[in-house]
Length: 341
Image 1 (cartoon, one colour):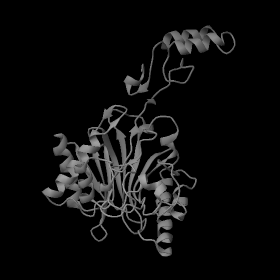
Image 2 (tube, helix red, strand yellow; image 1 turned 180 degrees about the vertical axis):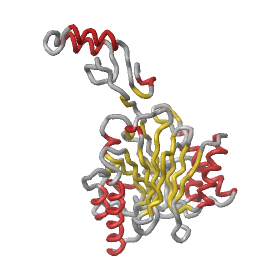
Image 3 (cartoon, rainbow, N blue to C red; image 1 turned 90 degrees about the vertical axis):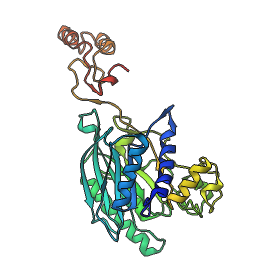
Image 4 (cartoon, rainbow, N blue to C red; image 1 turned 120 degrees about the horizontal axis):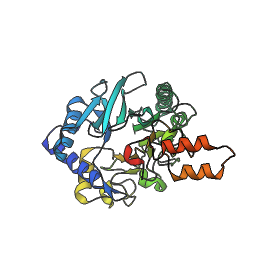
């Protein structure tokens, strides 16, 4: 949630500080700059400034942005790094409800398999705590899921943004998690009543400036990101950036120690929401399974020979041995470096 920031050099510096800190975080000993940034309550000028900040920060020209249409100046957007991701298409979805939603379709650079493709929704659902607000959010979740379900079965989908839910008792939560092609799963796996709840303090993302008491911002994923194959959510990587649960409930994020004082100050200045950070693994994909791949790992090696030997003259004979010899050390995994890891 950006509220139209950044708009000048001072605000640019806030975001540069935040992006630097996010990029410096270590995951399995590796630090990596942002690949994707989903934003809401942005505008055309601010989203372009985000691109410029990231390009300047890393001395590249590879960051780009797609933004939705505007409702009262309010847009959602998706910033992405074309050095790592190919934008296949994008859709401005303005029939979900209160706010427009941007959907982008990507494939990692260096991949050709359709199974490596994924979709990202930048989301902003109806705010408010009245019965009417919750009913509207529930309807918007139904509409969002209908859009995702229409993509078809087996799609990799990330739903990221400001859902404005007060807890998992809301119908909007139920509708997001309902069965179907685009069934959503909470990457934090933390249902509950989040508002003003000390037990969920480390998941609160709003408001870092004064009253940290709500888990409005969430990353949901489709089940394909959790099935142990191909593209995968990195288990345990979801976190509210700058929030390690040490701040005072219903107080500013700077009362805690989730980041350096300079980063916490930038987070408070930049937005009334904290960013949600999660990591994803591109994995590997079988492009064309070799005929002699007997253990379904898309390559032919001693493991396949062992399968053949174990069932020799049962299911396998000399013709299978000949095929094994012909395909020996063939590997059709993508990327190629996954072949002999």
